[in-house]
Image: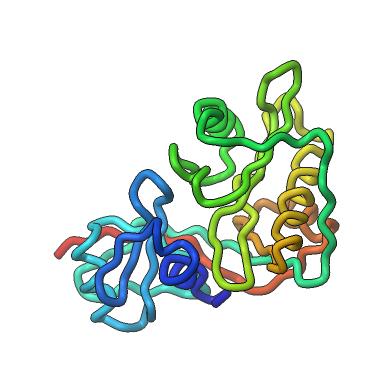
Length: 219
């Protein structure tokens, strides 16, 4: 499942957020930009994908498009797992809900943690830290599959970096995942060395090299 987490999520616990056709699926457009194939080496799955979208963001160890699709952008990344870590709840962390989405989107625009849309918050538990009422850091859950949940959208307002807020929220989100009897995992782009070192200190270990790749259907 970790080799194809989006497919495992969209055909499992998060099927309610999916638009699917045959051997392809994607998150609803206002939830997340990711799509997945049951087998990225199967040309038929790519044909199925073309029936539900003409632009797709996929992630996995290696992805080569089939006929009719062309590469738009590829970003190398890493997948890390928290198989033997301990989470820590944070008394200052507050639960974020749909009423907080405007502030969350504003923070994402400043901190640029990666894709986060107006209904991404529906995917799981999101926590934030406020200073004088202003949201200055957050983290939450994105891909969820049997036994595993991804920690995602870890971000801090640039003016508040260096205070350990991202680490605290990562551990707090992981604590909630572990409390359900699941294991946390996460992704990071390969050149975000500070984040990768931080996650290592928190107890995450390297699982696989992956890519985040977007593809365009040209017919």
